[in-house]
Image (cartoon, rainbow, N blue to C red; front, side):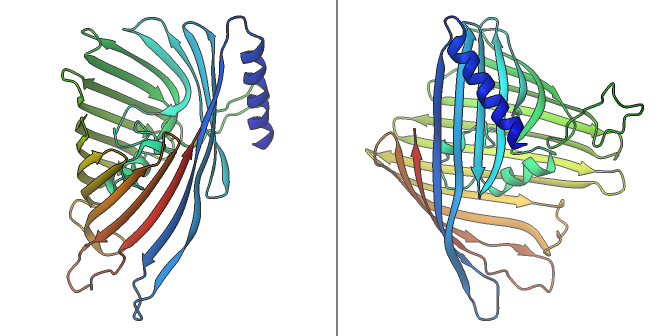
Length: 338
């Protein structure tokens, strides 16, 4: 894996430097966390410490005016990985293609919102579970996408086809007499979004996949309304779906609502999110519904440095007879971008 990553880095850098009229850019960011987590023990203990949450390096460039490439490498929680690797073919405003490993056109609160632009330190609980329930790897999959803007760039659409499992690849080879792929099948996503008023974004998506060998089927849908203008930050999103085989199908749903207001370099935030993991039935921890209430402060020192403080009050709805879980959170994030 390390050799493959190094090969792609050298390859794209050489192409970017030597291609006629090509451009080469570098960007990235660092996020360090300090967390204080209430632990559900008889002694009411709490755990605390530091985490190197994300370190990202993102080279990108152009082959021509209509062809761009992007790579993104991560060292998140001391784990090296290739996050993104794709090429964009922008034929026109109305039609473009993306090929490679990239974010699926699904939940807006997934990585369609960059990790470095998060309003709170973490994404809502329903969003984080939506990614795993949908068989995605960091909200991403391997495939091809067609997208574009219509109606004078007031309407955006995207349609993607990819592997059924975001962490698996399909690699038959002529050297083999037999092919034994794992988690193979198809995944499809469709998303539409409108921009009819300044600062206002309204959209919806639907996606599904089918793994032939495991008989696991997944589907999900959602809708969002975002309004960010003149210091006001208001966002609402609803997500729902199901996953599993016919015998083990699990349904889930949830939503979040966020409100913030920015005054110069300081932004005050509040968010309420809920997550129902098993259609009202308790999950493995005996929880029927998760309720999270988060308050936060963002301080933008300059365009490169952001300081965030969040406190999360957690209130789980437990199955009958089970005690409430004590698991509130307090954390701080220092982010540096370049």
